Image 1 (cartoon, rainbow, N blue to C red):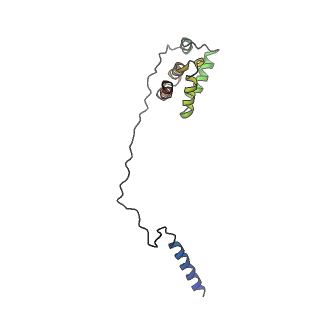
Image 2 (image 1 turned 60 degrees about the vertical axis):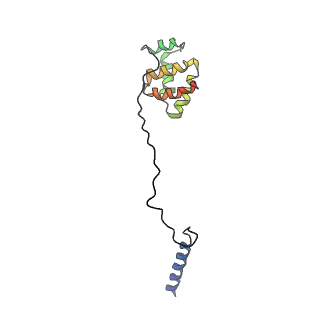
Image 3 (image 1 turned 90 degrees about the vertical axis):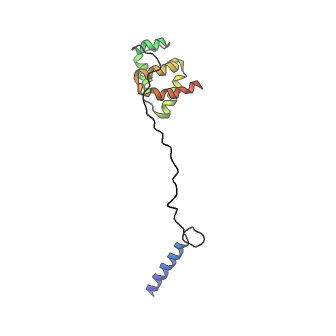
Length: 137
């Protein structure tokens, strides 16, 4: 009797599981075609090459700031602040900082951003220029 109960339970489970196949008609589902054509994916290669600064520099950050009309209390403190706000940022944070500082004449505006990049993080010049495009719209 024990043997029949186990066999009956096994058959019941098998019957329940075969009904869950999702085919609806009780027939075995067919596997997807092995000859399906994959959708082509376009590959784009981007080479990040730093572009030359779009602003002339004299080699003296303080003098270049003064030429923009920016005369901070301390040039070093201002430079540290700008490096933190521009050079130390990435992605969306960099975009927000560039747009914020670029729109603020007390920091030199767009040219102040470019000057900071030219002196402290020229490798970001291409990325920063893409964020500065915001002001040309």
